[in-house]
Length: 437
Image 1 (tube, helix red, strand yellow):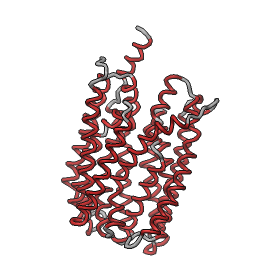
Image 2: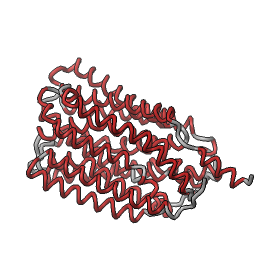
Image 3: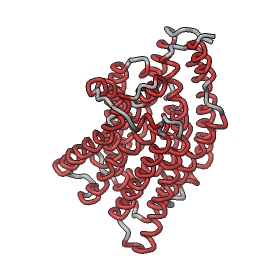
Image 4: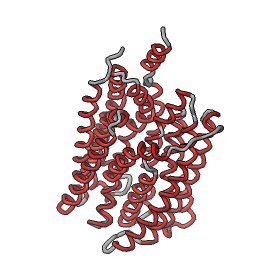
């Protein structure tokens, strides 16, 4: 057997095992459940209007932090995997060195721009300047964490990275909330919560950095490096714009309910439903951590049979878990919302809409990397931005009539349309690959 044939056979046999997938998904689920508990604690500790204010400000901070990542969390998979395969680490070392600085500088610029815009156009906003200023300090932590988790995934440590970024982070936040409540009692406010989130993310970022140092090959860390700014900028740009479009759709409801149709109660209801519905993202996030490097290999080898097997296994694992999760939310959603407080049972219809949207999007998200890795970055940009504008316009328009429910419907329609489009594109692109295996 030739060396090329041997490599092809190894690639074809590389599919995530159900046991490994369930292990990573289980860790992510623990993190999500702990996250729900954390948000329940916060809802119990703050008045409904203040909880809505925190959700609105936090949503914009997540949006800014994701943009500050510049799409690097998705982009590094291909050059890092290529360096490992070819054993040529010059470009990978250079990229590894400059990424944290790029994210840090972008986060600082983002902080200044967003806070200045808030101070200039905050007429009628329910978000106060001081709480917004502290929560925006999360920008660099969010951007760095996204990169460090993606790097650990590339180096074969998705389980440990997932544990630190999900369960462990929520444990630290939960302990911080309980300690602050014991110390301050009813004097606890939004600023206290924002400081707890900031300290917890700093701790987790340091631990993720140490994990990467441990799992990286020595050749990744030492030796001459090479900078390729033009190639990196053109390579990461599609991921940045696609990530921008996605995070805008995810977090825009908080922007709409915090600044355009300001209502503390509506933002609180949407926040409670959205945090609970995020449990349906568990399978998709675990699948991305395990499948994306393999999809990159399959697309690079133009192996249609391997791509097809990966998609089938994705639907078997991710799709099944999402159906089960949606059924559980339908059956027990009102009881789970009651944990936030008696007022939050009114968010049950919102929970069904957001849960269905998240479940479908996560299941269909397997097609997006196929489109990206085949070099269709410009198409991804155009479609993502188009659906983002459609979604935001729908949220604003429907929000006038139905407030949080209108925002949820507008968001859901945009996500369904976007991922159906990517599914059709991926199927067409796969038809031109070689039928191997």
